[in-house]
Length: 421
Image (cartoon, rainbow, N blue to C red; front, top):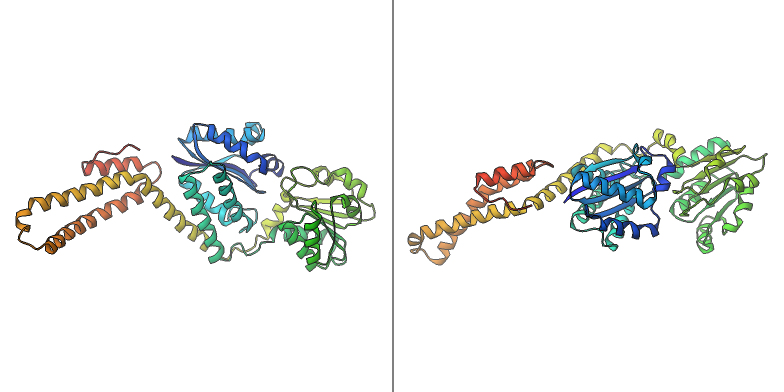
C-alpha cells in the first residue's frame, strides 16, 4: 500500500475555509467510519489544527486514493470540492513522509517551530488508532515523524518561541493602542494560548486583567496565577465594555463574540483592540468594520509573523536532521517492501552453502564436528558478505516508482522467482 497525504493549510487557504474544514471531536467517528468503508483506503489519519486540515492515507493507488481522500475531506465537512480545488495539495510516498516530518517539526507552520504541532500530530494518530483506522503503514510513518519532531526540538533552537502567536498579536495591539501599560485587558478562554496571553499582557504592564471562561473553576485557576479577576461567559458583554484589549482563544465550535455584542459594548471614546486566536474563530468577522474596533485574527497575523519569524539560526541544521530521519524511514519502508525478495535471496545463499557442504562431505568427514561447523560458518559468512552489498544497494536505489524494476533485475540475475507484491 502507498502513502498519500491530501490537505489544505494556511499557506494557500484563508481562515474562513480552514475553519469550515476543521474537525471537531465529534466529527472524527463518522469520518473514520467513512474512510474504512472506502475500498481505496486501507488506513487513514486526520490531522486538524488551526493551521491545516490534512488526511494521510494508506491507499491502493495514487489516483483512486486521491479521489477517496478528497471525498473524505469534502463530504465529511459538507464542502463542495470546487471550493478547495485551488488550495488543495497532495504528497505521495516519500514526499508525503517528508511533508509530515516538516509538519511535526514545526517547519511548515505559520510560526517557525510552532511547539503545539508535535503533540497535535501525536494526538491525531492516537485518535485514528482508537477508531481502528490506522495500521502498520501509517503507524510507522507517524512514529517516525514524531521521532523527527522530537529531535528537532531537543537538538536545535527551532521552536524556542512557544508564545509567538500571542506575541505577534500583542505587538500589533501595543502599536495600535499606543502602549499597553495601565490598560484594561480581557482574556476569553483558559487553555494554553490564553495562559500565554495572560503572561504576556502582565509582562507588558496592563492594569486591570480579567479572565472569562465557560468553566468558572478554570477561569479562577488561571486568574489566580496572574493576580487577575475572573468570571464566566455571562459576564462577557460587561467585560468587553470595560476593555481596551480583548484576546479570545477558546475551543468553541461557533461564534462566541458577535459583532452586535461588540457594537453594544464598545464606547465611542475608547478604542478596542480584539485579538482572535481561535480556529474556528471566536469573533464574528464583520466586527472588523465597527468604528473604533480593530480586529486581528490568525489571517491578520501572517504579515507580522513573516517579518519576525523567530528562531531561524538552526533551520539548516533542522532540515539536515529531518533529511537523515527521512532517509532512515525510507530505507526501512523499502526494506519491508523488498523483504520477500531479500528473504528469497538469502535462502538461495543458504541453499548454496548447504549444497557445497554436501558436495564436499567426504572430505569434511575427516574433520571434528567443531571443525566442520567452523568451515560451514566460514562459508555462510562469505555468502552473507557477498549478498550484503547488493541488498543494501537495492534498498538505496529502489526509490518510489523504481522498486519493481530493481527487484526484477535482481531476481533475474540470481534466477529467483519474484514474489507477489
